[in-house]
Image (cartoon, rainbow, N blue to C red; front, side, top):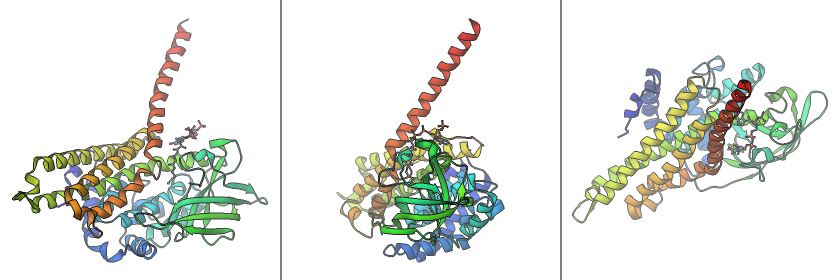
Length: 403
Ligand code: COS
Protein backbone atom coordinates (compact mmCIF):
# COMPACT_ATOMS: atom_id res chain seq x y z
CA UNK A 1 0.00 0.00 0.00
CA UNK A 2 1.60 3.28 -1.06
CA UNK A 3 0.17 6.44 0.51
CA UNK A 4 -0.17 8.84 -2.43
CA UNK A 5 -2.54 11.28 -0.70
CA UNK A 6 0.21 13.92 -0.66
CA UNK A 7 -0.26 14.25 -4.43
CA UNK A 8 -3.42 16.25 -3.74
CA UNK A 9 -1.36 18.93 -1.94
CA UNK A 10 -1.43 22.32 -3.66
CA UNK A 11 2.23 22.00 -4.67
CA UNK A 12 1.22 19.70 -7.53
CA UNK A 13 -0.55 19.98 -10.85
CA UNK A 14 -2.37 17.24 -12.74
CA UNK A 15 0.75 16.47 -14.81
CA UNK A 16 2.66 15.71 -11.59
CA UNK A 17 -0.04 13.37 -10.32
CA UNK A 18 -0.20 11.41 -13.57
CA UNK A 19 3.63 11.29 -13.81
CA UNK A 20 3.92 9.87 -10.28
CA UNK A 21 1.13 7.35 -10.77
CA UNK A 22 2.44 6.09 -14.10
CA UNK A 23 6.04 5.85 -12.85
CA UNK A 24 4.89 4.04 -9.72
CA UNK A 25 3.00 1.47 -11.83
CA UNK A 26 6.03 1.02 -14.14
CA UNK A 27 8.49 0.73 -11.25
CA UNK A 28 6.42 -1.91 -9.46
CA UNK A 29 6.99 -4.36 -12.34
CA UNK A 30 10.04 -3.24 -14.29
CA UNK A 31 12.75 -2.50 -11.74
CA UNK A 32 13.32 -5.81 -9.98
CA UNK A 33 14.31 -7.72 -13.14
CA UNK A 34 16.93 -5.06 -13.94
CA UNK A 35 18.66 -5.09 -10.55
CA UNK A 36 21.30 -7.41 -9.15
CA UNK A 37 22.89 -5.79 -6.10
CA UNK A 38 25.94 -8.06 -6.48
CA UNK A 39 26.75 -6.52 -9.87
CA UNK A 40 26.09 -2.81 -9.56
CA UNK A 41 27.85 -1.78 -12.80
CA UNK A 42 25.72 -4.07 -14.96
CA UNK A 43 22.60 -3.16 -12.96
CA UNK A 44 23.16 0.57 -13.44
CA UNK A 45 23.76 0.14 -17.16
CA UNK A 46 20.52 -1.88 -17.45
CA UNK A 47 18.62 0.64 -15.30
CA UNK A 48 19.79 3.63 -17.35
CA UNK A 49 18.82 1.84 -20.55
CA UNK A 50 15.45 0.73 -19.15
CA UNK A 51 14.62 4.14 -17.66
CA UNK A 52 15.69 5.78 -20.93
CA UNK A 53 13.67 3.48 -23.18
CA UNK A 54 10.57 3.96 -21.05
CA UNK A 55 10.98 7.75 -21.33
CA UNK A 56 11.51 8.50 -17.61
CA UNK A 57 14.97 10.01 -18.09
CA UNK A 58 13.36 12.75 -20.17
CA UNK A 59 12.66 14.42 -16.81
CA UNK A 60 16.40 15.02 -16.39
CA UNK A 61 16.94 17.32 -19.41
CA UNK A 62 15.06 20.25 -21.05
CA UNK A 63 12.45 19.77 -23.80
CA UNK A 64 14.55 21.22 -26.62
CA UNK A 65 17.09 18.44 -26.09
CA UNK A 66 14.68 15.52 -25.81
CA UNK A 67 13.36 16.30 -22.34
CA UNK A 68 9.95 16.62 -20.74
CA UNK A 69 9.70 20.25 -19.60
CA UNK A 70 11.10 23.57 -20.92
CA UNK A 71 13.62 23.51 -18.08
CA UNK A 72 14.11 21.53 -14.86
CA UNK A 73 10.77 20.81 -13.23
CA UNK A 74 12.06 20.13 -9.74
CA UNK A 75 8.75 18.66 -8.55
CA UNK A 76 8.94 16.05 -11.32
CA UNK A 77 12.56 15.26 -10.44
CA UNK A 78 11.61 14.87 -6.78
CA UNK A 79 8.59 12.70 -7.54
CA UNK A 80 10.74 10.49 -9.77
CA UNK A 81 13.41 10.04 -7.10
CA UNK A 82 10.88 9.42 -4.34
CA UNK A 83 9.01 6.84 -6.42
CA UNK A 84 12.14 5.03 -7.60
CA UNK A 85 13.79 5.05 -4.16
CA UNK A 86 10.65 3.49 -2.70
CA UNK A 87 11.36 0.49 -4.96
CA UNK A 88 15.14 0.37 -5.10
CA UNK A 89 18.10 2.58 -4.17
CA UNK A 90 20.04 1.70 -7.29
CA UNK A 91 17.12 2.67 -9.57
CA UNK A 92 16.97 6.06 -7.86
CA UNK A 93 20.75 6.42 -8.17
CA UNK A 94 20.75 5.61 -11.91
CA UNK A 95 18.04 8.21 -12.54
CA UNK A 96 19.50 10.92 -10.30
CA UNK A 97 23.01 10.79 -11.73
CA UNK A 98 21.75 11.42 -15.26
CA UNK A 99 20.34 14.70 -13.96
CA UNK A 100 23.18 15.73 -11.66
CA UNK A 101 25.82 14.70 -14.22
CA UNK A 102 24.31 17.00 -16.87
CA UNK A 103 22.75 19.64 -14.57
CA UNK A 104 25.65 22.07 -15.14
CA UNK A 105 25.23 21.72 -18.94
CA UNK A 106 21.47 22.30 -18.71
CA UNK A 107 21.95 25.39 -16.53
CA UNK A 108 25.15 26.91 -17.95
CA UNK A 109 26.31 24.92 -21.01
CA UNK A 110 26.79 26.26 -24.54
CA UNK A 111 24.26 25.38 -27.22
CA UNK A 112 26.79 22.97 -28.74
CA UNK A 113 27.36 21.11 -25.44
CA UNK A 114 23.62 20.86 -24.86
CA UNK A 115 22.99 19.46 -28.34
CA UNK A 116 25.83 16.94 -28.08
CA UNK A 117 25.41 15.62 -24.57
CA UNK A 118 21.81 16.00 -23.37
CA UNK A 119 19.77 13.92 -25.87
CA UNK A 120 21.77 10.66 -25.43
CA UNK A 121 21.47 11.03 -21.63
CA UNK A 122 17.69 11.47 -21.91
CA UNK A 123 17.46 8.34 -24.08
CA UNK A 124 19.56 6.29 -21.66
CA UNK A 125 22.29 5.83 -24.26
CA UNK A 126 25.02 7.69 -22.34
CA UNK A 127 25.85 7.70 -18.63
CA UNK A 128 26.74 10.99 -16.90
CA UNK A 129 28.76 11.89 -13.78
CA UNK A 130 29.55 14.94 -11.64
CA UNK A 131 33.14 15.22 -10.36
CA UNK A 132 33.49 17.82 -7.60
CA UNK A 133 34.89 16.18 -4.44
CA UNK A 134 38.58 15.66 -3.82
CA UNK A 135 40.49 13.82 -1.10
CA UNK A 136 41.14 17.18 0.63
CA UNK A 137 38.07 19.10 -0.57
CA UNK A 138 34.62 17.62 -0.01
CA UNK A 139 32.61 20.08 2.06
CA UNK A 140 35.06 22.94 1.43
CA UNK A 141 34.68 23.11 -2.34
CA UNK A 142 36.78 26.27 -2.66
CA UNK A 143 39.81 24.36 -1.34
CA UNK A 144 40.02 22.08 -4.39
CA UNK A 145 43.46 21.55 -5.87
CA UNK A 146 42.78 19.95 -9.26
CA UNK A 147 44.07 22.44 -11.83
CA UNK A 148 43.03 23.42 -15.35
CA UNK A 149 45.94 25.29 -17.00
CA UNK A 150 45.97 26.78 -20.52
CA UNK A 151 47.51 24.40 -23.06
CA UNK A 152 47.71 26.15 -26.42
CA UNK A 153 45.05 28.61 -27.57
CA UNK A 154 42.09 26.22 -27.53
CA UNK A 155 42.72 23.71 -24.74
CA UNK A 156 43.26 23.31 -21.01
CA UNK A 157 45.29 20.63 -19.32
CA UNK A 158 43.63 19.11 -16.23
CA UNK A 159 45.77 17.58 -13.45
CA UNK A 160 44.57 16.25 -10.10
CA UNK A 161 42.46 13.69 -8.28
CA UNK A 162 38.70 13.49 -7.68
CA UNK A 163 37.19 10.97 -5.31
CA UNK A 164 33.81 9.54 -4.22
CA UNK A 165 32.60 10.10 -7.77
CA UNK A 166 29.28 8.39 -8.44
CA UNK A 167 29.15 6.48 -11.75
CA UNK A 168 32.96 6.63 -11.71
CA UNK A 169 34.10 3.75 -13.89
CA UNK A 170 30.91 3.41 -15.93
CA UNK A 171 30.17 6.99 -17.00
CA UNK A 172 30.66 8.10 -20.61
CA UNK A 173 31.38 11.67 -19.53
CA UNK A 174 32.11 13.68 -16.39
CA UNK A 175 31.53 17.32 -15.42
CA UNK A 176 34.86 18.14 -13.77
CA UNK A 177 35.50 21.17 -11.56
CA UNK A 178 39.06 22.49 -11.46
CA UNK A 179 41.08 25.47 -10.35
CA UNK A 180 41.53 27.68 -13.42
CA UNK A 181 43.21 30.45 -11.45
CA UNK A 182 41.26 33.64 -12.27
CA UNK A 183 41.24 34.45 -8.51
CA UNK A 184 42.01 32.67 -5.26
CA UNK A 185 39.33 30.50 -3.60
CA UNK A 186 35.79 30.14 -4.88
CA UNK A 187 36.21 32.70 -7.69
CA UNK A 188 39.01 30.80 -9.42
CA UNK A 189 37.25 27.56 -10.42
CA UNK A 190 35.82 26.45 -13.78
CA UNK A 191 33.79 23.45 -14.95
CA UNK A 192 34.60 21.25 -17.96
CA UNK A 193 32.97 18.36 -19.74
CA UNK A 194 35.49 15.50 -19.96
CA UNK A 195 34.79 12.39 -22.02
CA UNK A 196 35.80 9.11 -20.37
CA UNK A 197 38.08 8.11 -23.24
CA UNK A 198 40.16 11.33 -23.15
CA UNK A 199 43.91 10.54 -22.90
CA UNK A 200 45.19 11.40 -19.41
CA UNK A 201 41.93 10.42 -17.70
CA UNK A 202 42.19 7.36 -15.42
CA UNK A 203 40.01 5.45 -12.99
CA UNK A 204 42.48 5.01 -10.12
CA UNK A 205 40.38 2.79 -7.89
CA UNK A 206 36.83 1.63 -7.37
CA UNK A 207 35.37 2.29 -3.91
CA UNK A 208 33.25 -0.29 -2.13
CA UNK A 209 30.61 1.15 0.21
CA UNK A 210 27.92 -0.20 2.58
CA UNK A 211 25.18 0.20 -0.01
CA UNK A 212 27.16 -0.62 -3.16
CA UNK A 213 26.84 1.54 -6.26
CA UNK A 214 29.40 2.54 -8.91
CA UNK A 215 31.88 4.84 -7.15
CA UNK A 216 35.49 5.65 -7.96
CA UNK A 217 38.57 7.80 -7.53
CA UNK A 218 39.51 9.57 -10.78
CA UNK A 219 42.96 10.80 -11.77
CA UNK A 220 43.73 13.47 -14.35
CA UNK A 221 47.29 13.43 -15.61
CA UNK A 222 47.80 16.02 -18.33
CA UNK A 223 44.24 15.44 -19.51
CA UNK A 224 43.78 17.78 -22.49
CA UNK A 225 40.27 19.18 -22.87
CA UNK A 226 39.01 21.66 -25.51
CA UNK A 227 38.15 25.10 -24.12
CA UNK A 228 34.82 24.69 -25.93
CA UNK A 229 34.01 22.07 -23.27
CA UNK A 230 34.04 24.67 -20.50
CA UNK A 231 30.61 24.96 -18.86
CA UNK A 232 29.89 28.58 -17.91
CA UNK A 233 32.43 31.37 -17.95
CA UNK A 234 36.03 31.26 -16.72
CA UNK A 235 36.06 31.39 -12.92
CA UNK A 236 32.35 30.57 -12.69
CA UNK A 237 32.80 26.95 -11.63
CA UNK A 238 31.80 27.49 -8.00
CA UNK A 239 28.58 29.19 -9.05
CA UNK A 240 27.91 26.39 -11.57
CA UNK A 241 28.36 23.77 -8.83
CA UNK A 242 26.26 25.59 -6.23
CA UNK A 243 23.40 26.41 -8.61
CA UNK A 244 23.31 22.75 -9.72
CA UNK A 245 23.26 21.63 -6.09
CA UNK A 246 20.41 24.09 -5.40
CA UNK A 247 18.32 22.01 -7.81
CA UNK A 248 19.53 18.56 -6.86
CA UNK A 249 19.73 18.90 -3.07
CA UNK A 250 15.92 18.88 -2.85
CA UNK A 251 15.91 15.69 -4.90
CA UNK A 252 18.25 14.00 -2.39
CA UNK A 253 15.61 14.85 0.21
CA UNK A 254 13.02 13.27 -2.09
CA UNK A 255 15.00 10.04 -2.41
CA UNK A 256 15.26 9.89 1.40
CA UNK A 257 11.52 10.37 1.53
CA UNK A 258 11.05 7.36 -0.75
CA UNK A 259 13.23 5.24 1.54
CA UNK A 260 11.37 6.50 4.62
CA UNK A 261 7.92 5.84 3.15
CA UNK A 262 8.99 2.32 2.27
CA UNK A 263 10.30 1.75 5.82
CA UNK A 264 7.05 3.04 7.29
CA UNK A 265 4.99 0.76 5.03
CA UNK A 266 7.17 -2.23 5.89
CA UNK A 267 6.86 -1.43 9.62
CA UNK A 268 3.07 -1.00 9.42
CA UNK A 269 2.63 -4.28 7.65
CA UNK A 270 4.98 -6.15 10.00
CA UNK A 271 3.48 -4.65 13.15
CA UNK A 272 -0.02 -5.63 12.03
CA UNK A 273 0.83 -9.25 11.26
CA UNK A 274 3.48 -10.19 13.85
CA UNK A 275 2.01 -11.45 17.12
CA UNK A 276 3.60 -10.80 20.49
CA UNK A 277 2.18 -11.44 23.97
CA UNK A 278 -0.93 -12.89 22.30
CA UNK A 279 -1.77 -9.86 20.17
CA UNK A 280 -0.48 -8.05 17.08
CA UNK A 281 2.64 -5.96 17.72
CA UNK A 282 0.60 -2.95 16.59
CA UNK A 283 -1.60 -3.27 19.71
CA UNK A 284 1.34 -2.19 21.89
CA UNK A 285 1.25 1.52 22.59
CA UNK A 286 5.03 1.73 22.29
CA UNK A 287 4.73 0.44 18.72
CA UNK A 288 1.94 2.92 18.02
CA UNK A 289 4.06 5.78 19.37
CA UNK A 290 6.87 4.79 17.05
CA UNK A 291 4.56 4.55 14.05
CA UNK A 292 3.06 7.96 14.86
CA UNK A 293 6.50 9.59 15.08
CA UNK A 294 7.59 7.92 11.85
CA UNK A 295 4.50 9.08 9.92
CA UNK A 296 4.86 12.64 11.24
CA UNK A 297 8.50 12.76 10.17
CA UNK A 298 7.60 11.44 6.73
CA UNK A 299 4.96 14.13 6.22
CA UNK A 300 7.23 16.88 7.58
CA UNK A 301 9.99 15.82 5.21
CA UNK A 302 7.55 15.73 2.29
CA UNK A 303 6.36 19.27 3.10
CA UNK A 304 9.92 20.64 3.14
CA UNK A 305 10.98 18.76 -0.01
CA UNK A 306 7.99 19.80 -2.09
CA UNK A 307 8.03 23.35 -0.69
CA UNK A 308 11.61 23.70 -1.99
CA UNK A 309 10.75 22.07 -5.33
CA UNK A 310 7.63 24.20 -5.81
CA UNK A 311 9.49 27.40 -4.91
CA UNK A 312 12.17 26.68 -7.51
CA UNK A 313 9.53 25.81 -10.12
CA UNK A 314 7.80 29.17 -9.48
CA UNK A 315 10.92 30.82 -10.90
CA UNK A 316 12.91 31.67 -7.77
CA UNK A 317 16.48 32.52 -8.78
CA UNK A 318 17.89 30.88 -5.63
CA UNK A 319 16.36 28.29 -3.30
CA UNK A 320 19.55 27.80 -1.32
CA UNK A 321 17.87 27.90 2.10
CA UNK A 322 14.79 25.87 1.14
CA UNK A 323 16.84 23.17 -0.61
CA UNK A 324 19.30 22.93 2.28
CA UNK A 325 16.46 22.57 4.80
CA UNK A 326 14.74 19.92 2.66
CA UNK A 327 17.94 17.92 2.19
CA UNK A 328 19.00 18.15 5.82
CA UNK A 329 15.65 17.37 7.38
CA UNK A 330 14.54 14.64 4.97
CA UNK A 331 17.79 12.68 5.16
CA UNK A 332 18.02 12.89 8.97
CA UNK A 333 14.33 12.03 9.36
CA UNK A 334 14.62 9.08 6.99
CA UNK A 335 17.56 7.69 8.98
CA UNK A 336 15.40 7.89 12.11
CA UNK A 337 12.31 6.37 10.46
CA UNK A 338 14.32 3.49 9.02
CA UNK A 339 16.07 2.86 12.34
CA UNK A 340 12.68 2.62 14.06
CA UNK A 341 11.44 0.25 11.36
CA UNK A 342 14.46 -1.98 11.98
CA UNK A 343 13.63 -1.91 15.71
CA UNK A 344 10.03 -2.95 15.02
CA UNK A 345 11.31 -5.86 12.91
CA UNK A 346 13.62 -6.98 15.76
CA UNK A 347 16.14 -9.65 14.74
CA UNK A 348 14.62 -9.84 11.26
CA UNK A 349 15.43 -6.16 10.79
CA UNK A 350 19.16 -6.80 10.71
CA UNK A 351 18.88 -9.90 8.55
CA UNK A 352 20.31 -9.69 5.03
CA UNK A 353 17.66 -9.89 2.36
CA UNK A 354 15.03 -8.13 4.49
CA UNK A 355 14.03 -4.78 2.96
CA UNK A 356 14.51 -2.66 6.10
CA UNK A 357 18.08 -3.95 6.47
CA UNK A 358 18.79 -2.79 2.89
CA UNK A 359 17.17 0.61 3.61
CA UNK A 360 19.29 0.96 6.77
CA UNK A 361 22.43 0.74 4.61
CA UNK A 362 21.02 2.78 1.70
CA UNK A 363 20.09 5.88 3.70
CA UNK A 364 23.41 6.46 5.41
CA UNK A 365 25.32 8.05 2.53
CA UNK A 366 22.54 10.54 1.79
CA UNK A 367 23.27 12.38 5.04
CA UNK A 368 26.78 12.95 3.68
CA UNK A 369 26.79 13.40 -0.09
CA UNK A 370 25.81 16.61 -1.95
CA UNK A 371 26.56 18.55 1.22
CA UNK A 372 26.62 16.84 4.62
CA UNK A 373 24.03 17.80 7.24
CA UNK A 374 26.63 20.02 8.91
CA UNK A 375 27.19 21.92 5.63
CA UNK A 376 23.43 22.40 5.22
CA UNK A 377 23.36 23.97 8.68
CA UNK A 378 26.09 26.42 7.66
CA UNK A 379 24.20 27.23 4.46
CA UNK A 380 20.87 27.80 6.26
CA UNK A 381 22.42 29.95 8.99
CA UNK A 382 24.29 32.08 6.43
CA UNK A 383 21.10 32.70 4.47
CA UNK A 384 19.33 33.79 7.68
CA UNK A 385 22.17 36.07 8.70
CA UNK A 386 22.30 37.62 5.23
CA UNK A 387 18.72 38.86 5.68
CA UNK A 388 19.59 40.44 9.02
CA UNK A 389 22.67 42.09 7.48
CA UNK A 390 20.60 43.35 4.54
CA UNK A 391 17.99 44.80 6.92
CA UNK A 392 20.70 46.50 8.98
CA UNK A 393 22.30 47.96 5.83
CA UNK A 394 18.87 49.15 4.63
CA UNK A 395 18.16 50.84 7.97
CA UNK A 396 21.58 52.55 7.94
CA UNK A 397 21.06 53.79 4.39
CA UNK A 398 17.63 55.26 5.16
CA UNK A 399 19.02 56.94 8.32
CA UNK A 400 21.78 58.44 6.15
CA UNK A 401 19.31 59.78 3.58
CA UNK A 402 17.15 61.39 6.36
CA UNK A 403 20.18 63.07 7.96
N1 COS B 1 24.02 29.68 -6.23
C1 COS B 1 24.75 30.59 -6.93
N2 COS B 1 25.88 31.16 -6.42
C2 COS B 1 26.26 30.81 -5.20
C3 COS B 1 25.56 29.86 -4.41
C4 COS B 1 24.38 29.31 -4.99
N3 COS B 1 23.66 28.44 -4.31
N4 COS B 1 26.17 29.71 -3.22
C5 COS B 1 27.23 30.53 -3.24
N5 COS B 1 27.28 31.17 -4.43
C6 COS B 1 28.28 32.19 -4.81
C7 COS B 1 28.31 33.29 -3.75
O1 COS B 1 27.33 34.27 -4.02
C8 COS B 1 29.71 33.79 -3.88
O2 COS B 1 29.78 34.67 -5.00
P1 COS B 1 30.49 36.11 -4.84
O3 COS B 1 31.91 35.79 -4.45
O4 COS B 1 30.36 36.71 -6.21
O5 COS B 1 29.73 36.82 -3.78
C9 COS B 1 30.53 32.58 -4.24
O6 COS B 1 29.59 31.63 -4.79
C10 COS B 1 31.23 31.99 -3.03
O7 COS B 1 30.27 31.68 -2.03
P2 COS B 1 30.67 31.47 -0.50
O8 COS B 1 31.48 32.62 -0.02
O9 COS B 1 29.43 31.12 0.26
O10 COS B 1 31.66 30.19 -0.59
P3 COS B 1 32.20 29.24 0.52
O11 COS B 1 33.44 28.63 0.03
O12 COS B 1 32.28 29.95 1.84
O13 COS B 1 31.03 28.14 0.57
C11 COS B 1 29.93 26.18 1.47
C12 COS B 1 30.96 27.28 1.64
C13 COS B 1 30.10 25.27 2.66
C14 COS B 1 28.53 26.79 1.50
C15 COS B 1 30.10 25.46 0.12
O14 COS B 1 31.46 25.12 -0.07
C16 COS B 1 29.28 24.17 0.03
O15 COS B 1 28.07 24.18 -0.24
N6 COS B 1 29.95 23.02 0.26
C17 COS B 1 29.35 21.70 0.16
C18 COS B 1 29.59 21.19 -1.18
C19 COS B 1 29.06 19.85 -1.40
O16 COS B 1 27.87 19.70 -1.51
N7 COS B 1 29.98 18.87 -1.51
C20 COS B 1 29.61 17.54 -1.80
C21 COS B 1 30.15 17.20 -3.16
S1 COS B 1 28.94 16.98 -4.37
S2 COS B 1 28.45 15.12 -4.14
